[in-house]
Amino acid sequence: MGSWVESAEAIGAVDRVLAGGDLKHGRRASRSPMNPRSSRRLPADKPRPAAAGRANAKSSANAKLSANAKLSAGVLRVPAWGEMPWLLAGFSTRQGGVSTAYGEGELNLGWTAEDAAAHVAANRGRFMQAIVQRAGGRHAAELVTLRQFHSGMVRVLEESDSEPQGGLATPEGRAALRGDGLITARPGLLLGIQTADCVPVLLVDTRQRVVGAFHAGWRGTLARIAERGVGTMRLRFGSKPKDLVAAIGPAIAGCCFAVGEEVRHEFESQFAYAPALFTEVYDSDPVRQKYPMLFLTARAPGHSNLGPQIHLDLHEANRRQLLDAGLKPAAISVLAECTGCTRLPDGRRKYFSHRMEHGFTGRMMSVVGVKG
Image (tube, rainbow, N blue to C red; front, side, top):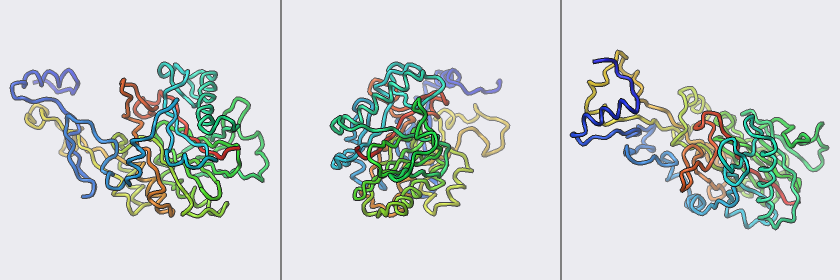
């Protein structure tokens, strides 16, 4: 027989030939854990869970948050934070905008090459209005963002600081400062972090009224940017961990975030709990399992394309960092929806995903600030 080329058509042909055997094509049928705590099997014909083996680690408060966080005008809010009337905060989705580059009526908040600048400006205006209206609509706020570059750099905007040369933003509203974290106690500033799979982390000192926003991709997480944020608040503003609350926003989850061995090794060199962050996902196909002779190749054992893939849970990684920094488990809210696979009831993507859309996508924004 000729060489086998895996494709939907080829698998379909095998399925038809072997239909009498009551077989069907499947994928990701099992998961082999990096450690016993993450052990379980995933049926091939059922979707994978949004968080890989972390259910026991999440508090009941976080589970309630995920169920009750509501989509309103493209904004997700943290219900518990509604008890702080002086606070402005929210996470955007991709719905409720005017952009057409990535789909009709989408809320792209990043200055991407494919989207019209006028559309991005209009989207930002809508998003800001939605955030401020929740606070009564009487509070002006200046949006401050960063030229992010996957670092551990945290910028502090203090009330006594003079404006940096060139201001906090360009005349068009683009970021003027470089970094991946912002902290301030200045009323009237709305700190913004842009993401399209990376983890947004918002931090609030409920007593001192200091707020922070952090961009934690895998590199930023490895650089401990969430921990640095807590440490910077303690150093510059005298914040105490017992007074801090945090929200971890939508990001690519362990179900979809495959990484290389080098990433796992980097995390293992930094964090004692690193094994709990990773799982191995094995591709599996019942046709291949029952008829392996159909798929013989000249590859050496262990070099097939059936896996395993190493998956990283960045939500849990940042939650663990915040715990190590002194926050109480109940003070950390996790909006654990996956930007890679979460869909609306009509089938549209709920979030922008750089990985799943191969770089052709918009940006969400996560913001926090003190009312002016």
